[in-house]
Length: 238
Image (cartoon, rainbow, N blue to C red):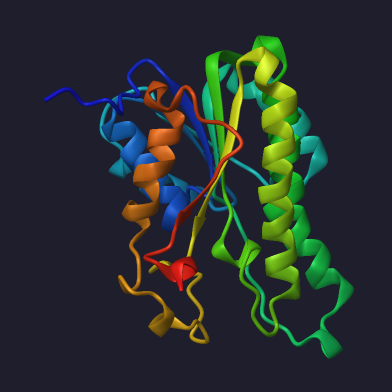
């Protein structure tokens, strides 16, 4: 049987590759033939992800994607890519009455600003290949609110909405932009306060998010852009 999700010959840049969904996306992309470029803040964790990636030609670049100067020079240091996965994210829980401005800003900087800045850099013609695909890991929290989630829900709502705008703006360049929206996934970020009982298919695994991400990166999804794909075990179906 032909494998339609084929990433051979593609270079894929993955943020948040130190653990969780980002690590799963990087490893699966490598398994599908891509050469991956890993990003995160912890060099030791990135080295562990590199060891998990089959194949050759994989690299890592440690750095803070909320640092504008770091992102501005990133494309120059990595060279052209064919796909971008923004899986880095922060999740904070704090009641509205006491949520500090700094917490709101941290969520927006990581979950939203960084993705837009990365797409801005790599959408320049010299830094992307034909059929360039950008995928951000958003969340069902972009559509479903919960108490204490103003920072997280707001930042994920922003990235989902921005992806639709970027998809329209960049379509003439042949660039696709999509998001996937997981629900509660078994990662280090999973909160003890999560409503796990609301998922008909139970708690998800990082690999179950990585699979649709890799599909959206592949040529099999060449006619899909501006989509927010729920990967939520039925969370939003209720």
